[in-house]
Image 1 (cartoon, one colour):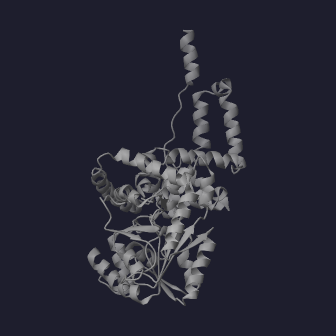
Image 2: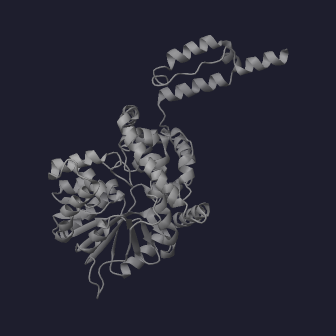
Image 3: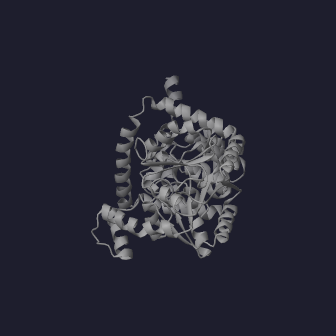
Length: 460
């Protein structure tokens, strides 16, 4: 299993890296993001201090995760909400299925949610003969293409406007040269009736607020607000790490998420939901469920060195600065969460044996750590993942023998100096050309090693 997943990753990466059309699209979109991000972060009086404060708040929360989750549960249930604890994806799916069955629901409208992508909810509901309508424009496009999100903030980043116009022309007979505004209006026309006709709305949440028992949802299109207002049943699927201590902490986290995610000062719609419709209220669901999803998160929590991975607020900034992600694209990872943060958490969530290769898919340039709004030391965490993969015995026999040979040689300077530069270059060009030299020019080694030159100079 591990070999096939890793081999597919290497094969797909090699193809995507040299796809110039793909690179042009991604570079163009990331350039737009960079300009917006520079404007967004300039609005902070002291960005570095805000990031330190956010890091400390997340540290405090994750170190006391059980306490804050119980506080959230207690305060949420007081208002008539219902909590479901799900140990894994299968359990979360089954609980949603029970709710759907109980209410005889045949269709759902769904707001953008990476937690539901993580548990592969859409394909599960399709097998249950339940129709899912994605309401976020990017997710709606991806659903029409039967693809996975390319990026967890901008799921259709890899598509040109012309690609989307062609898709809508084929599916809905819109003009082939339709503008972005026309395509958006068509999607709105198709989806607007769904909000009032389905019984169940499903969302994620950006934050769980412990002291008020609320969930916070941030978005730019308003579809999540509609998804939670009209249907009789609202189900929110949320990772347990999303909890924060107080509603006052949103004053820090909302601007950090907006500026690092999209370059905005604040996203357009920020909604706080505190349970089902209360007496005297005119909208909102009759029943509200929050599914608290573990799905490997407590495994990360148990790794004291790597539990920083749970601080992530899913802004996607690390993806946008990562040279690996920019070259190989989001679909190559074959995981819900891509890029540096995905390479950090996926081996723990989906199995170190199968996904250890992602921790090696990094140049360790440090840009991800530098840009992270909550100060996760991602490059260090990736090195710790590599360490764990070795100590847990997941290195291949070839890799073990190669490092054993390398260790033997570097400890014996005389053995290295025994061969001259000409012989070393011959070995380098012939042995490593297929692996390292296929797409790059290999370096030429000096005729004499540094150690040999040093000795000769000091003799003289």
